[in-house]
Amino acid sequence: MGKGRGRPGGNPELEQHKFTTTRAEPLVAPLHLRITQSMKHELSKLPNPNDFVRDAISEKLASQK
Image (cartoon, rainbow, N blue to C red; front, side, top):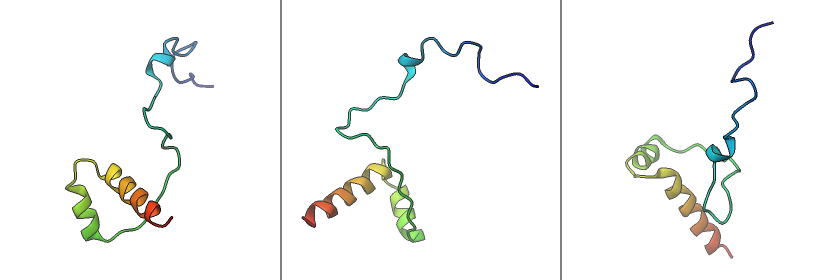
């Protein structure tokens, strides 16, 4: 049997490198959707396209209430 991956005993400082967020609700649910090529091109010009899409979805959902 081959060698195991990583270092023996794991990383004792793992808590220091753990992902954290300052958001009220963490981003844990993935969403996959298809968009037009022109939409993708326009999104790619933005500094943070993921936040743009999240904000657009939030605004649209809020207007539905």
